[in-house]
Image 1 (cartoon, rainbow, N blue to C red):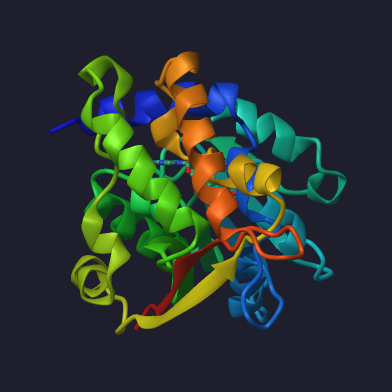
Image 2: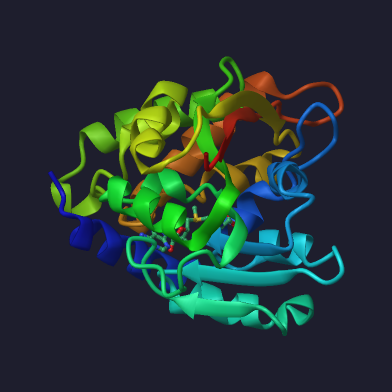
Length: 273
Ligand SMILES: C[S@@+](CC[C@H](N)C(=O)[O-])C[C@H]1O[C@@H](n2cnc3c(N)ncnc32)[C@H](O)[C@@H]1O
């Protein structure tokens, strides 16, 4: 079992090389109502003025949140390189952007009325400590809204990609495999209740939303190949994987040249009692 320190070391190294990978891979994805998963999260905290993004990456969600006038925003991430990109976003010039760990938030008690987290909570070790910290920096009645990954929809290109990736990884030495990241309980409603209930949150509201990433094969590959698992693989192995993926994608391609691709996200919201 990887320690939290080794998980975080992996994440720092990966994002030093790929500081904007999640936004690049997933911001074009759309839910059935036309919103991206970032926009869904933005809308979950529409009435909140003081908002913290935990695991903010390159600041895309914060930039969307900054569309509401008069908001005070803060973001925290392990990755110095991702935060540099966030600092370059003009609407975030007034935001407080901190490098640090969600397990030790550098903010006083009762600072925010909402915490958001897009595709990050599910990667964090010592999750009870993260929950305690989020609860501490939220004001009474404050809300935590997060998006966590929910896997493939099935029968489309992401599903096929995961199948290919799994068989690729089976033959790989441990030096080319990533540490197990985060706590699986964050990916289910009951699990999240188990984590959040003891630190004062009411029951989690839970919605599963399909996100469509269909497009030309190159674009779909650019999205799916952003996964952490590809980070430690050597170039020749990634190239083999890419070729196999293109071959499978050809079978799926529709008459208008698009490869159907989708994944699920869980959108979870919990309010402090
Ligand atoms: C998959 S990326 C998502 C980035 C961004 N939220 C987005 O969706 O574009 C996960 C982010 O969480 C950050 N992260 C993971 N564990 C963390 C922790 N314990 N404390 C702070 N940030 C963390 C990583 O550095 C990374 O930037």
